[in-house]
Image 1 (cartoon, one colour):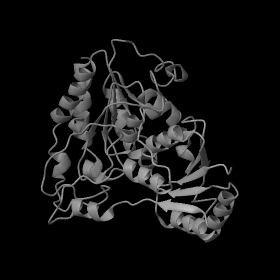
Image 2 (cartoon, helix red, strand yellow):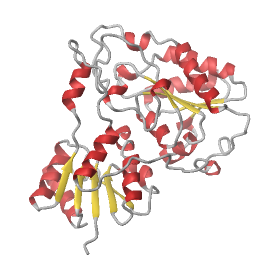
Image 3 (cartoon, helix red, strand yellow):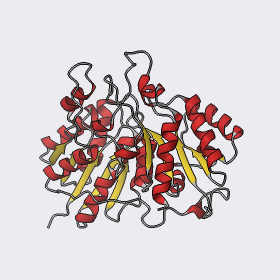
Image 4 (cartoon, rainbow, N blue to C red):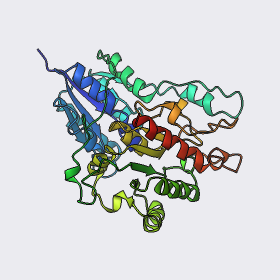
Length: 352
């Protein structure tokens, strides 16, 4: 009997790849006899390395090692030698389409994602907007597997089942959480301006949370150069505020720390998805984008989201378009109190 071995292709941003985890986990648990290999960028490896015994990871650097048509052909030959029985293109961009075409020509079983672009266009159009929930990325990924003959029930809790990741593996200043402490994560930035809450208002959120929780700690997540100047100032200005990237070494350590948070405040960004993968409730702050586009974090609750109902919103699926109003009302009209109230509601619910 031929061994079943599925190749799952997804490059792109960290958040998109993170949304694969619940689907790959469900597949691995419900088809333990099937080998699963995820092909992505090297930085994504920690999301899959210890997910399940039958899940493996392959890295491919498309900017250096596998550039251009020659590089894609090299990568295809490397992949073909693995003798996959099915190929799932979870990305559907030029490079993955080329690999998919090569596999199809050689009579491999292939399928690709439907991103439901037409429905998303109706979400963001200026006129005749249709606020209809689109299929989530999780469901879109699962649909690809179903078309290959592997339907799955989406069942997933955390990449650290039980009590979270091993705090003892972190630096001494972070390797113990006392029972009376509240740990709050804040990821205040995102790749695009349409998804970023004004930093001066986020500082007000931090100031209030530090004052309200005298035995608590606030952890700032993010590593961009623009972010660091804010994080440095905030961590110096307020007690018990730590810039995570300044004391931790990699995404694995950040996931361990995240798994012990009581709540995460995040934009529509990768950190929302990472916190979701370690079973932490997220207070999501949404501006130009909208949960209806299908990108809300795994198992997150819409009641915990902070967002304004405006006729112009959402104006962008990914937050990468300039505000055509010119005032970024979707973010600027959100008050710090709105975010703080959601955080306190989450904390109170956890203590009931």
